[in-house]
Amino acid sequence: MKLVLSKKEMKLSKKRILIIAACLVVLLVGYFILTWPKKVQPEAPTVIVEPAEKGDVEIYGEYVGRIRAQQFVEVRARVEGYLENMLFAEGKYVTKNQVLFVINQDQYRAKADKARAQLKKDEAQALKAKRDLERIRPLYAQNAASQLDLDNAQAAYETAEASVAMSQADLDQAELELGYTLVRSPLSGHISERNVDLGTLVGPGGKSLLATVVKSDTVLVDFNMTALDYLKSKERNIDIGRQDSTRSWQPNITITLADNAVYPYKGYVDFAEPQVDPQTGTFSVRAEMPNPNSVLLPGQFTKVKLLLDVREDAIAVPQKAVTIEKGGAYIFVMRRDSTVEKRFIELGPEFGNNWVVERGLAAGEQVVTEGFHKLTPGIKVRAQAAVPKEDEEQKSKENNPSK
Image 1 (spheres, one colour):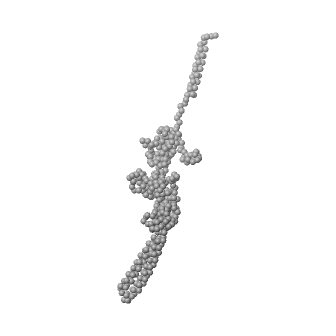
Image 2 (cartoon, one colour):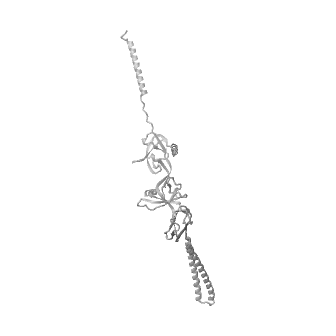
Image 3 (cartoon, one colour):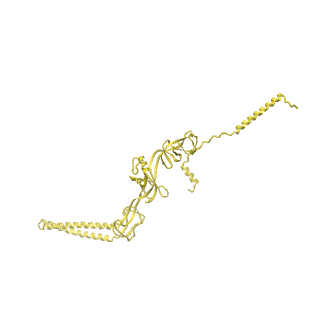
């Protein structure tokens, strides 16, 4: 056995070792290339975007109002007597001149009969005096009667005519008092419960309140506005309480009922107090509102929404998209290349869940409404359109069928 290799064999052995080493290096490099962890690219954040909308925006103020009747009239007795009858159902609707109460008429009917008889007596005396005067005149012309006779006949006739006039006035007064025994409704409306019982002695002088009649087919809504609201309305050239024919709209109110339902009719402001209450810093405003079905009851409180202004062709964004800090208010706007821009804007009045943008945004620009808290200017985003409100309501109903 040979222990010493020949030179040729040693060369072959070195080549094999080099080839094997090269193969191992290639295998190791390939292994590291295949198994080395790849650098993961950060995924673009997903945001919700909505286009900035342009349209007419209604600006409202909210207040607490109180309803009162347009007319509230007290029914009182105008003559003295015992209450004999009541001809209405309490709480029901009565018409103008409808008889409500009857006062005992005996003494007033007797007084009218006496005045009527006195009038007939005086008319008869006046007729006799007239005939006497007509007989004296031709006799005086023929010197058959003296001037004194003529003067006496003339005076007797004039006295009789005056007595007739006085008796006629007494009869008119007696018949008027007799008519007052029928107490009538001064207007059409709903009547309250009676304040007196049958058999009660009532009389004039404002002491005997029998009932009240409320006209409530139209009601008045009173509420108070702050001096700040007044100044803002002046800045917008709006005079609360006055109709302006140059505007396409007028200050109107809507009210909310006790069950939180919105009353279907609108009222219009017809009066505003010209001075501010120094104790409250507010001034009174009154609106007139139709009430055909008597849904609104005088005395009840209600929520009032007053239309203060209408901004035509205004640009609006959701409140949730706006961030307000010391430097101002800003939003994130998505550009066409899907990158976002932090943009400062000038805000106007708020309405509902939106802001009016006075400056800094154009209609149709894509505003980020959700997911902007994780954004930095210039970052690329994946945009999703906002779910329409109708779809959200439908999903809510499907998830909560009991509602």
